Length: 530
Image (cartoon, rainbow, N blue to C red):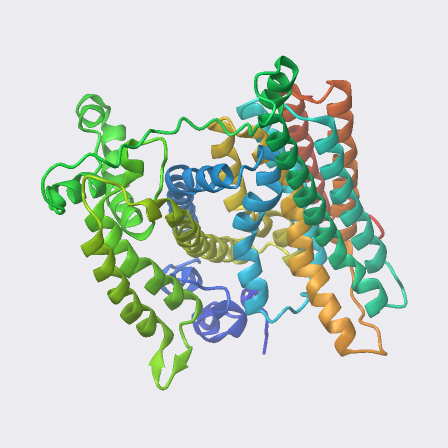
């Protein structure tokens, strides 16, 4: 009996519904909605018209989920990153390598840990496909959205670590005798070294700023200080915590309603029919996300504080985070999320009695950590649904596993990075977004290749593990190395002015790469090495 979900097309039409309902490979790629069951059990796929509308409906749902992700990133993820980066005095470059990379890569890390750090058959192809997508397509879109100038040192550092990572992975996967622990272990040090260099640089920069601050008044020192200070342009709203307007709970429910129900009535009244439909669809999603994600925005009055909303979020956020990641875990027969809820009830009662509606409490700024965990969890859920939809579409359209991994599945995995980086570029943080297109592939390679092969290599000592790049893997790797050289050439010839022309060239190169993959998929040309 066929084992892979893609083999559904080799079966009789009457057996396909039962197959996708019971097959482990199909079931393992489902999150909230079983799209495979919908298509093969409820749609008469013998009728091409019905099959077309089924696929179109999935694409529309996919678009809606992408919109939800964009909304969450723009209104919750970006303000959270700004506040944390500002509190740690990080530059855009350092924030891109550390904070943004970890935040974007955390869903990948959760997935890898859930799979028990096993190197998949297409791990190399997946990581290389994600890298070329981020470097050329996402990086190009960042330049097209908001051109910027980058420091030559930072660019060459990021380029060097990514190129080293790609070249080393390519080297060990081509070893005919297999991969031993002595080759697998150094692959982890690339990411460790990258982060260590960035942290050391940031500490040196912070020390230099403090030294110059002690010399304020000196014209030369002031000029250097302005150049070195963080380029996260935050217009901090000044707080006056001495103001009091009546009792602790004055306008408690009115404040909650204004915080949770935000609707642009003028835009709705004067908008077109399509805009009105869009605003109505957005409203319930907006309310749900506002309940699930606390936001600290230092550019808004009272830093976005709402006493009753915050107390509800203290109950809801830790509970659903523990529920999602520790659903099956129990202690003395009681689920972990029940303990989280009981503990947060006590915390919530204390917070309610010590806070006021008219004054932001001092501890509220530390809520950014809770906000980051909450928004990552929400994006993880949306990303899992995107992955499920892309898997279903790839299966229904009969794409080969390698072609699907190099295209639609990689797009699904990188969809969070795509939305986040473009939204950051729109808000003026292009350098942070572009830096993450270098560091995110390094993190992905460490999570999906370096850590799993190291674990397997030590477990199989003295034997070596045998892994292959597969036919598409070598093709994608060669195109990625060329793409990196093109990116370097663009930056050198423009004196590190990342212009729209460079972005257009990189996006065009990625589209050319997709064209080559299509020719390989349909056997018009051969893949490299085969």
